[in-house]
Length: 343
Image (cartoon, rainbow, N blue to C red; front, top):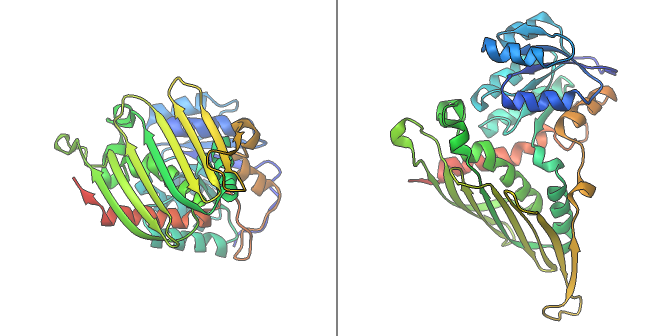
């Protein structure tokens, strides 16, 4: 079992040197850490990542070699989704803390096993559900409590995901690809914060519009969820759209709240509280400022937890990005893929 540490300046390894690895690198450069190792099977990606760091790190072509070298306290995993489970297990068994990119892993049983392994070894296992930190999400989670109970949620997310990633692992089911698992999972995670009751029913249609080209993953989806207590949610995900749109609308007994972001347009974020006397059309509107509600990024929270000698054992309280908090969304996504109609 790893000793509780105060890691005054944690030694970090980045596993996966693509675009997402670069995002984590940029966040880490603002934190009191040392990025001492980078890992990627692609030599060019490895070299580019190394050259972008202020001090040259050690270079590794596999995470097994990195872990065997014993040079890191923690790793950031920015790898294909299907690789996460084995890489997380290897890191935890080596006594290394882990921050993994969303969606964590693809199977609920595996997720629970890895959380238990981390707890048993007093190691941090965080998952980068970055939207949890964003100001609009924090505002809407707060608003859900003020207008609740929430009865209906409508979510739309569209982006040119397919056009951006068509030549990558994200187009292949065996690698953990698919728009719902890659991007839609963030919206489902927020949804479970808006409506904390268990999901009782799922009616989902997932589309593989490019299956004849060898790309065997979902690109579009339409999902209706029914929750215990009667709340309902309708989610539409379009991964081959021509513009980026994110729209969330909440309707509760005490009012409504919403977020709209269209590419190149000003955002709209608000909560409208119903008139306490029940007068239709009356009430107050609170215009939200995302900057006010923003909280720590996954990387900043991970580093802070390591540096404060926090316990990660079985009795520890959950951090915002603790992998234990992701178990409901991992289970939900697995159910959707299993129960959906595929067209």
